[in-house]
Length: 456
Length: 94
Ligand SMILES: Cc1cc2nc3c(=O)[nH]c(=O)nc-3n(C[C@H](O)[C@H](O)[C@H](O)COP(=O)(O)OP(=O)(O)OC[C@H]3O[C@@H](n4cnc5c(N)ncnc54)[C@H](O)[C@@H]3O)c2cc1C
Ligand code: FES
Image 1 (cartoon, each protein chain N blue to C red):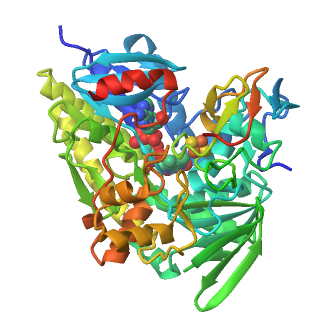
Image 2 (image 1 turned 60 degrees about the vertical axis):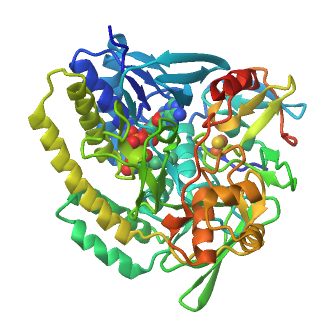
Image 3 (image 1 turned 90 degrees about the vertical axis):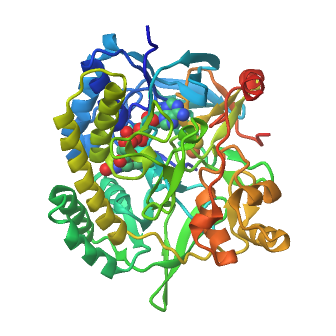
């Protein structure tokens, strides 16, 4: 008998993939680090907190409830491992850890639906308590029912900027300002998205309008932000069209879009390609989600940022590919339907990327911390690049320790690549990508022996 | 002083824990990060410069929220539920 397929991640992509495999008569193993299903967008609280689904998930409540319910209904037909980290993948075996205990599972077919995290660039003061990523600010509110401060500034670019600011406003928190790093003219490009995904677009416009109506200042073209405070955020300054701005606040939520969580694809041996849209290397895949490695599929934001609706479609499409490749009957018509939906959503993502652009010319001041784990400044990185003639990011890591810390470069590798590109005058793709290493996240010391064993 | 403030779960059962020896109270459903930042300005001090840190991503990605228990065990505060009797230290993590 063939081993069961493995799905990593129980967000929209992983849930749809699991449902599709079960419908084909397979019994997948589903491993997810979170204690409950839903992924980032449909994340659940640890215990009920009195809020209705609409109170928690807003416009997306119906989708959240549907996915939670349908996944719960799979319970007896899958091997679900919540609260479990996949820390390594090697030779058809996944290494897991849960509550300090380790386990490994052999699998036949692997769907990576690992999602995304906030993309950031260093800002002076971004390590101060009270500064959180936009996603982090949302998790505090959505999953913990807490606000990151009483007077919160929202800084950066991307749809989450307006969404999370609006969610804080609705929760009764004082939203001091929305500081958008993109010029207002970028937003005019949204018009092109009206036919592709009118619902999402109109929701976004509504958030911005309601923020304005509530008197929240929205500034565009924000440059050189600087978060101030002594052991705690107390204000933020910035430049804007030749003027400077300054506001008192006790918290800042900051993000510049999202970046895929792709370490496991790397450990699985998948080839990567540079994505102009995401400004990062993503696993190479065909339209169905097949990676370059036979039997390994990638779906959802972990394979390139496309949003939650696309994640659902991609999860289902990848599962259909696995079913087909296993020689089982699969619905080719449904596969084509999903592919055309994904094509449309990808065009919508192009529009979003143009309307919420990444600030390409971000200048990181020399004394700003670039790598939070190893506490290396941008100036130290520049000095290393100049002294050793570094042109590639793994070399920069070896020389400067950037990306060598506990987060494995999740937070700083994007910034390090931007810096390398700026200093050497090459494109950011030429800076390369940090090689992934097991364990993908810190694991208990008791597992360290296992790790060296696996590495040998 | 506190970083976070609570908007929901005001009536959830309380959970007692200690922070650097001082007795504190959190609520059922809190992560360790939430429970600490409801009381304090930071979670820990950084390894090299000793600056105050309070986490960043709250989703288990940035690893900027590790704290230690008096037993020596280490926890990632944002992804660990608060449990009764935890004795948490916020000092330097090495
Ligand atoms: C913090 C945050 C908040 C967001 N909020 C919104 C929002 O409100 N609205 C919106 O439209 N979009 C939001 N997004 C974007 C949204 O995440 C995605 O569009 C959508 O969730 C993608 O679905 P997915 O299934 O690809 O991945 P996700 O939903 O991210 O699910 C991936 C799952 O994989 C798990 N995982 C990853 N690596 C491992 C591993 N090694 N071992 C075990 N499990 C692993 C994760 O824990 C997670 O549960 C948010 C993104 C982030 C990062
Ligand atoms: S706050 Fe980022 S890992 Fe906990």
